[in-house]
Length: 308
Image (tube, rainbow, N blue to C red):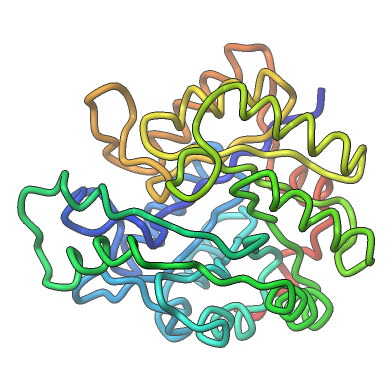
């Protein structure tokens, strides 16, 4: 078995400031939590940006550039920037920061989908900011758009333009077939870092049989041309990533995906989640990949060739 890559998704665009006082908002908080997560064992740091005033997701490259260089100067971790952005952003807005930063890796959703996070609004007793409740509740009528043309444009502009490779985010079985279509047409090149995602309303459900089915499907479609990773939302996070590690996969944790560290226990940092899954991996007699090992496994261009 190869070593296990731990990705940490530090802040995301799903959770809002009222959901957790520990969610990093400002560039300083994002940088500090990213560095701590890397020190705890994450070899890849996945990043979104937020307005430092009210915490809403922002695509502004100037905000990204307040924390990207700080993280790079303080850790050797691979920096992975979102191309999913936040709800309602256009493709050009979502690509603005990655095109400027030219990172080693970006996330890339492998299809359009209903993306419903409205139920989480009902669990918040009092919102800190006026934007949060309508942002969440509005997703009952929201479609995240990534058409085949959009996907090809991202690969062309970022991948072929700047040597960026991708974390291909697959929220359902059809997304695996979309990725296989792109591989068959040589739009994308192996190794494919394939992130299978469970528990988002609109995507495949968080059932262990679904994890098995997604892995079997990916094996059939990609053979040895892919590197498999798993994330799961909310309370499903740790059980699913543990199961993935036991099956020879890689894992993603972080406050973007879950605000919890255990049953009824809120996570206090991203590093806390990284340390927990690292401990589980090592208790299972497996090793965690270093950033250098992750770069070799995923054939990344190297941190000296980025734009920040």
